[in-house]
Image 1 (cartoon, rainbow, N blue to C red):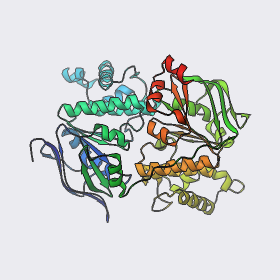
Image 2: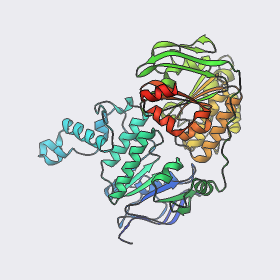
Image 3: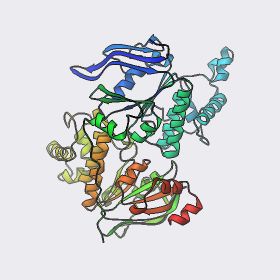
Image 4: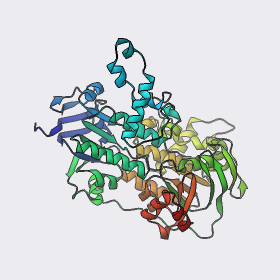
Length: 511
């Protein structure tokens, strides 16, 4: 093994019974290298990361980290060898504070240097200090480190998970979809951190569905398909078209979003809406229209959707739904009125992970398929079968736990749930977070078809490419307010990012 090879995989295979989900005959990762890893959901990316981080025990093969064999299935040994994983699912302890999560399982420097008594006591001041230093080192300032993690928005939880991994001073840093919930500014901080780690001689594995990010950052791109390494590309070879072709085995046609129908009724009318950290906001949305909400992290994108849905209390303003005053006290009131929400964090906010696919698919239509308040298993199964079939959900059975499905198929079930409820208004918060390129195209087509059928769609996303692709109009938020309202003919990344910065000049130009 060459001195500059930090990680070496030899004959690594992972099987579950007769099914092989990962089969890598040979792969070497060299010091100072950022390796992009791409593939559709189910391609084996997460399994590969699990094997490397010790959270998944390989069925066969050998992994060497810095020349030392990794004890398979031992995350503590992987960490001791210098491997840190930033997972998609944020394994943080919600009730503990930011500081406690960041230093969980470690002592503060003061405690390490103290006597026996100091080492056995919890050094609260030292924990706070080191937590702030860790966050500052990755470019995050102004966070209350005493605040429980469960009370933080998803993007900030993502940055805390990254800081936690960074604090272990790893040799091998594995970033699994690290920017999927982040806006452009925060994503740039993560990419800079990866570059800094590689420049110091470390290895970065960067798993991404945003192919432009992979192109921007990777020194090399490996492509997985059906558990096998099908391509190992140089930056020059790793064009978007080539990566997609290797991932799906064919060319992928781009979705063709139809223009909005003319003269449609106004479905949503928001006037002077205010809430904690939001507003005042004025917004109109017509039937058949897809309006995107862009902005940096903390701009108020999610707050706007949650306030409309009744998940966040309003402090002022009015909302009309189909011309009638709409003031839900709870999301259940919004659902009853014909509003659906696909939330940012599907596993925490939308899915019953341990329960069957069919339960999850029919949650929004239980009243419709019940007779006199009684739901029969037959009616539930029949309606669920229709939903998953219409959306092309890939699964073994509708009785299997939905947590066993890929992210793309989970997201399609959530879409199917709301489309089956035939809402007037559909709110989408990061609609393709953690979804591969093939599933994204399918979801975009679902959104477009729903709009053509007359549904009004309000979609908040941190992915500008996504909004530019699917939307008829984009509103840009900064500091809780809408600072620009752009029709499709004025779409440009530069204009949106300038507006998102919240400058007065841009507000005057875009209003």
